[in-house]
Length: 472
Image 1 (cartoon, rainbow, N blue to C red):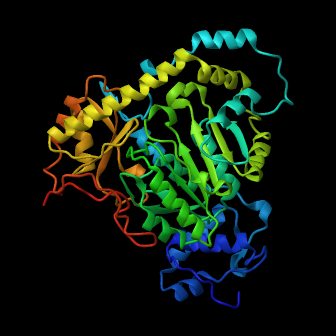
Image 2 (image 1 turned 45 degrees about the vertical axis):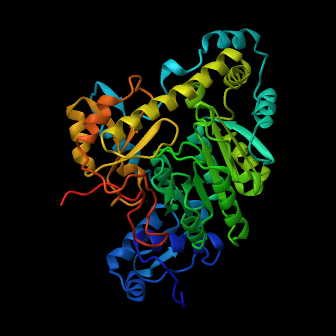
Image 3 (image 1 turned 90 degrees about the vertical axis):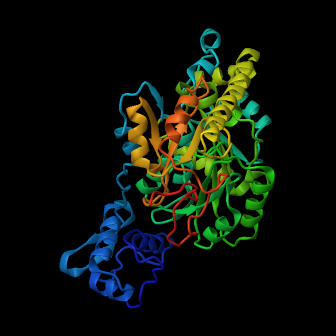
């Protein structure tokens, strides 16, 4: 190339992302020769090793090819391949150890799920003949879902759980090197998937009402193509957005010149009391909305609904036909019956009440021990601690397991924290709160404060403001 390449983030990921975006936009074409490692390192003022790592990432993704002494060139599109998956989720699993009380999994209480047996038998006995050519969504289920859907999106389909919906939605709009806004902290699977497809996460801080609008607006200045948000019972914090906050985010998107597709993961839906909100109320063509029924009706159902612009949903449906095809219609009909059945509805309503009781009991117990966390909703509580490793060891010594906070944070130099799942805490969690409090020194503030990522593009704490005093 004859002119310098403009790169605003001179890290390996930043270099790879900038080149990938130039390839995706057509600014760099197949066969174009890239600067040498020496040339680019001199231009950016970084070491040759930094540029080499960026080149290696592009090569692993199939976007560039090396021809020895001739140089490095943009590859033909056919050679592109996904980046190998990273290990955030694996780190959580590998840290597993036997525990008499496992509060690390983020799963619902089996005792609070609706009973499936009678309705499953009814569906099996009354199932109509099916074939490979029927619509991927059972029509009566589609109509029922649309009746109380929070967006006016043109298309809707059914897939195999929330993560399947998020991944398929992202795959439809994100290319290698693209930037994607994420909450910080966020669900580790999101970060794993973004790394697997070669996308760059842009961390945005939070408070108890979700994403901070001013940080969201700054993040949009980096031209992200997508954002992943959790409107209710955010995992891991439990924060829920209200109508004012979601409207503020919608207004920021409306005023922005950047077209950013928002993927909303409503994973807990009917088991949390928060209002059902969506940016899609104002911007239906910029929102992919996901509603999962795993936590409310059963993880083994593996069912989530995904809505969005028709052209995006059509792409999801078309690519899915090359793999699983559709979510089993017998399971879709079972969900339809569960959503209409009064006994199942009462069970879900009871679960919503019980989870909030358990969460409040646990956070109240923490408060009495001098540990202040946000109220929030859902199955998880995010607890800042003085030292994450020491806290995990201390809890394990008492037969208690929780999830480490590190995998949830974009920046590995994250604030020290752990995630506690409250669904198994039928007794109020007094013991867990007492053991946990023993690892935490008195806090400087009496409220739960989130955010402080240092802002998009700046090096910051990468998540919640640390509201515990670090040992000196």
